[in-house]
Image: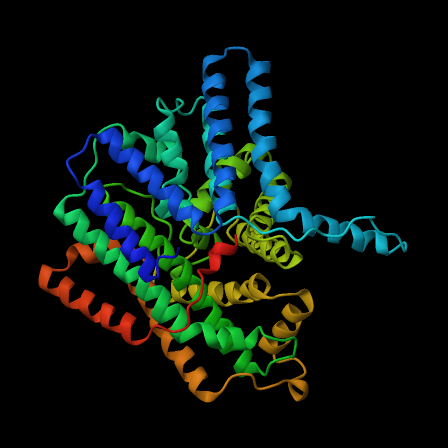
Length: 473
């Protein structure tokens, strides 16, 4: 079940209608939990068992860790949680990648493992809910947060359907306190939530799918070297597509949660207005950035143990961030490129002793340079293979123009230029605000007219029925 479907509209209307009936709070939470399991089961019912396993294991592990004063016992319990959750993630997501990599290395000596890479269906959202349950176990272990008082509250935190499949990555300390007292959206919250849902669907169905998906797919459908214009328009199309697609999902998720009276953390803040890569990761997939910072970068030592350790920690964090996105060497290279750019930025700024320009032409120039570098990294994020990625990079750099192929027609090129220009202009103008603040500043008549326009465009330009990009993670 996806947000951009009539099935979800009916599902959401029924769940919200029952939720707003005058029934006890505990039954409302049970209703949301059951609805969340039904939402997830619509993908593949047997995988609900994995959710139950993670839920039960980490509920009891956290409860026993909090009650114990024996450090050795608490560490063993934490290891149990890590082994089960990371073991499931490794099996379903990385088993094939690991076997293929080992076979490649062994092949250098004409050897091979006696097993083939398994054909395993990846459970939807396993990377997201694994990170959520890991953060809960780690926070309880380090006594940053107390364990949930109610098993129902913990189960609902982990499986609440708006964020279950593609985030944002919500932490227990951000969500479970909201479950302690009855929640119901005010008329203003419900209206604002509907605004966010509508805008998120507009981002996904109109901007990502209708305008940008096709040119991006044309670039990445083969391993030919594209001509300079096709390469740049194709990668600009993907840069816009992945932003509008993922931002569209999380905007819908935040809006749906708001319609029930809940608050989710912000996940995007106009990232293509970033001046530098540190700024980019404070604006792009912010819930993942905070997770990697708090549970990987800082425990590795952060910037506290000298320059060499700092560079190592940055690189390891981004390499693992790349692997989190996918079991492929293209994702590893994508993460490594971000790690190198972050290290280079530290060198240029003297490790914070010199600041990047805060405004004016200087900031604009750095923003453009940052965006261009990000576009190069997107090549490896989207490419099906390393040869394809290298071929597209040759096109972006104008290498071997006599052998390059024209992959995009002029109407596609004009469409990409128009939408990308609007995207970058919007990010630049709104870089210091949020869409929630924008909608809140509008008068009711202005908001109504805007929503009517967005809905009309959604209906008239549905595009092709495509799943959200981040469902594969």
